[in-house]
Image (tube, rainbow, N blue to C red):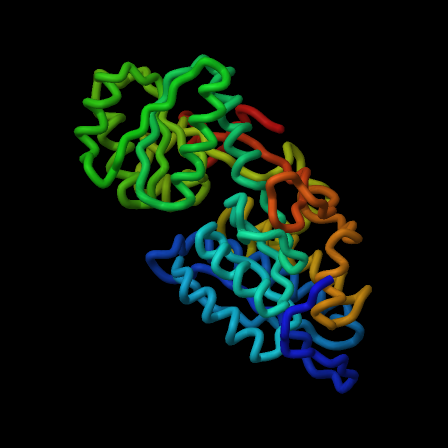
Length: 370
């Protein structure tokens, strides 16, 4: 492996902590609720590692940095964490932010295990330093497209904001639908109000509207506008990026937030480990944990296993990605090279399409799974 210049982290036997950097969005414009769930999973796993004896007798310590959904802030945080001597970096929810962190970690020779971001191209060139738990966007969004097509929706509209992430999602959907005789109508949210979006849906005879936009603005006003327009009573609203996953969605939208399918990365049934972690996360969060909390827990579970087996040298950690075989909360985690993906990838992350049950909005219905 070609090793870029990096700050070596020596093996220690003096009881000092093994430090892992954690990147999470904890302030706006970051998706704060996602960041809180991610951090809860990370912290729970660290606590359990330490209760079981730590890493070769040394306590595991999480060094948390708030990215606030800012790529430059994330890159600067990676630089700082590298100087502080962390053995690896974990976390991040926002794809564009994770990409900035991954590029910087690759340049520094610092292992980065990305918990939640799905953008296919986390780095421009293949790297040995970065691995990822969440599925690539191309896989998850094609599963979502299969669900739409199976439900009879071949003419869909996407209300999209300007972003590499939203543009990538639009391209995936457009290509997938086109190859199956479907149509994707693109609505530019920099030029349209929610009321104008409703008019466009009528004019284009779309049967589904996908929200490729930020939360709560403009996602919440869009949902309210479509739900209140009698012309669109039969139009499905979808949110592949997962906005309805978190409790704030139901709080802001009430019954209007139900029956909006989104992607979630959980198996149909959690393993015994997953069920135990779910209970502990409920206590920590005082609410049901999202899939993002499980991603956080699994990230530390993988890194702890690697560090126990191979020590705290950064290069040895990166070299170990293809040998990982860890029982996580959502299945056995193993990394491989996936065509078109530049990082080490957990290839079989469970993918579901779910929605909130209109009759019981706090309950999720599994509509489709891969």
